[in-house]
Amino acid sequence: MTLKNILTAMVLLTITVACQESLEERCQRECADFTRKKCPMRIDENTILDSMTFRATTHTVGYAYTLSGMLDDSAYLQRADPRQLLLGELRNSAHLKLYKEAGYRFRYAYYSASRKGAELFETTFSPEDYR
Image (cartoon, rainbow, N blue to C red; front, side, top):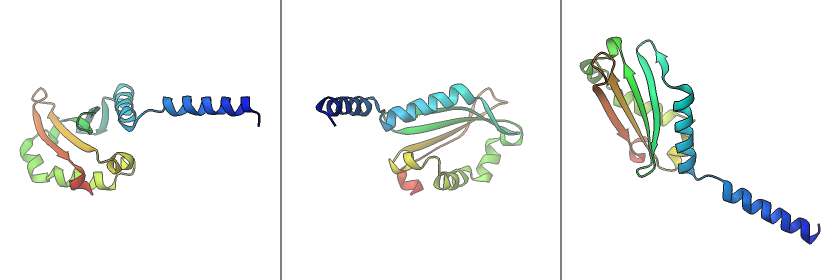
């Protein structure tokens, strides 16, 4: 390998490393892309995922949902114990592994379809919760 080839390889490697995005930038991009391309997304008959966001200052991935039908009732949600259901899903989620390993927080907010977006339920999980 000539000196010119070595220098060219070093420059390309430096450019490649400099162009890599941080985990925070990746998360921000993935959340924005997902929201732009796939939201609102119907999850089931009574649930719509409205957006996925990332707050870099707190390393929090946020999910906002709108509930309708029988789920559009805060009393029902209290009986169903959604926090424990969500925590189980978060613990078992393979696609969030990288963010869980980095200690990110996850916020879930549910809003009412019938009451013009009134908040029905909100919870945030920290690494202490899901590890």
